Image (cartoon, rainbow, N blue to C red; front, top):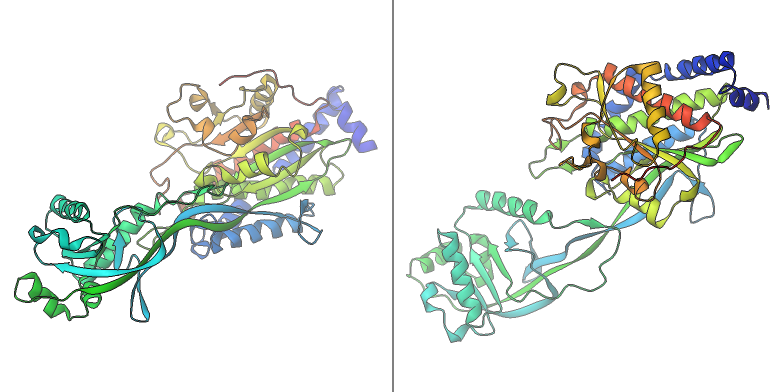
Length: 500
């Protein structure tokens, strides 16, 4: 009771207000660069393999965050299947992709994107077997290929190869297989490149596809020389002689499947809850996304130290600072939800799942969202001054929130608050590009903390050694002071703006 009275009086009595500020500083100063570095060294390590959404590396990061929340005594609030409560809000995403794709020869299945690859998003949902006709000279394409698969050599000119395939389909071919001119090693590289290009269309979604994909009308593939020879039941040497017109090859059969559909990807948001005192039904939410983009086709790991390891580890330190305050009898009046979300890199999917599908905390109880995404580096516009942070969205729904943010900075941090990207005409549209937006669209006030895009954005060079830890520490402390005010003030901030 004494604790509540002191906090209520802080906004009335100058003496007690000074006491509260001193208390705020005490816990803010527990947020240390060395602790941020310790957490980030693991979160952005090669062991986590870039934390791609739904990957094993992301699951390891989730476990690390959940264990940290548990060690601080934060409450687990997510209902689990067995009736208990946990820290992980698990859900499925749906990812377009090939479910099953192969060319069958005898009892063996030949490898998709290794020994052959499709031209485009080819969908053949059921295994099919058809006659296969080798055509040495594309000018020989005629009515005899109707209803058959066609195997012919690639031209050195891609347009000619495309036209040959079109001619075969016009003559009634069911499938066209073009034999690559590349040697085996080069073919593997081409296949990997094609897989990388086509994977861009394998987007993740919250919703399952309502209607199944229709089979492709003109499915065509590129196959390696060795696979083409096996498809015809001949040696590569004999196949190459046929290319030169020195051998005639008999027709064969081919069994093929190239099924596209939805793959289930299990992922999870991670939540730690701190219950408030006299205003516990009002909740301040602090978010950051902990996923990144994984590993590229060359095996390089995109560790995402800044994007968004910096925000993630900031959440860990903020939770610890508030836990220390609560242990000393200075816990927040309002409740705080510390939440690291998944799927940001795939379209803000984790935060959208929380706000649109399964809000563990009713949205009407949420006071605001403070979102942290990339706060450990500098952009080229601030190469000569790292004492800044971009503040986005603070005034769009609540003038009070904007004033609180400004005061927290002037009282404790004194950074340059850069509002460049808060401009409604900002061509980058950053206001719509991180997880706070799913709260803002529901009329919940937000602040997005950001230090800008740099040369390692979504590249393998986004590593821990490039993080500016003294700067990073101060921004996390700024978030703390802002959250402290929001969670302890007498009145809930008012939604009084509607800027776009």
